[in-house]
Length: 207
Length: 265
Image 1 (tube, each protein chain N blue to C red):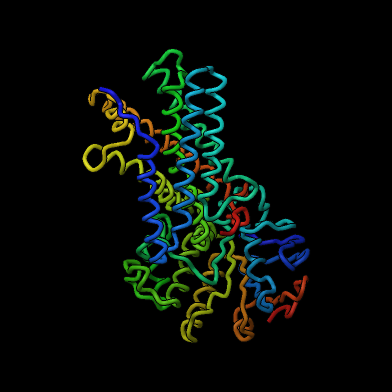
Image 2: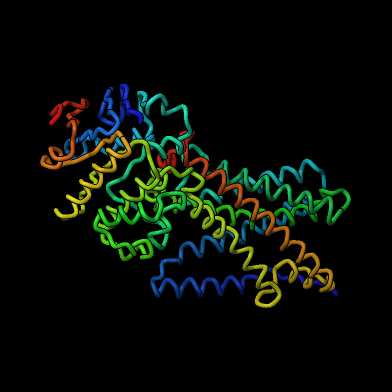
């Protein structure tokens, strides 16, 4: 599987950040609110104009159409959006087999019937977990997670962390994981970088 | 049958009723008095002037003058489309898209109707061309304005949804398919409703006018059917173009949502 490489990325306050994330590596990114963590993720997903070049393996971002890039380098926003009436309509037919889907639902602590639920019945924590499952179900080659456990209680946090770590290793995905919680960063991160002003600095090399 | 001409003082009676309405709405503090009076005044002035212009135009009947009149009508319609938007595309794109869509749809349909269906000699005879184009433009303008407004407003309100769909790897087409459908319906609804209600709920203006002017109802009805069909075609294609161009403009070549191309309300 391919690594994710940022070369001289400039977006918002961040100037000329060069970072390489290996496959199956989780890079945790922190920084004060408003420091531009989400914008950095958006630039990597090519949702926002930015300077510099980004590579997934041998593919450079601008050489493929936007939607092809985002299908591979998939971002999961902090606030997930649901546009259809039922949960299941957000999962496309080509996604996962029923068995894999059910295994994911079990591991995330979600009801197996949730696909038939109306979206209005979901709690914010359920939405957040389903948004992760929805993204992984589309089989991306890299993941950009914006505070993936923000709305969860501690038990659900543990489930989500364990499930994500398993999936990331099994699929060999390079991951940028925006997080606030120092303990979570220690638990899941292979590396920890922080945005300070215009620079992205190393906080911790490895655990 | 002779047409009864209206004396100006009889029109003043109708104007007095508007004044009465203005007094009541002012007393009830409904806040529409000013725009009501301004619009009523505009109607009187604009229509009186157009009466003079049309008399001159019918007398000359040259292609140049008819074309100039059509151009002015188009430009004013483009301005009206702009004025009816809560959020405009920056850089004059709302005006450009609105005017372009109206030009392509209403002019094409009007010229086709004149040359192929009605066939006056010459084909641009102002007695036919100007009223026909006026009705086409008036309705297309409403359709284009409504669909563009609905489109940009939905883009604005649903920006998080659109971006989340983009994040999941959908194309910009897929990400805004529902919004485009909705905007198209918004622009077409008045025409579709008018066709459905014609003759039962409402007697359309053109037919009524022709009957008042002494045409046999059977002829008036044929013209009315023609007009309603062509108006719907013009409105439909106008809204179609406005929605297609407007939504394209709100994405860049990387299929990113670019709401910075939309100015606030």
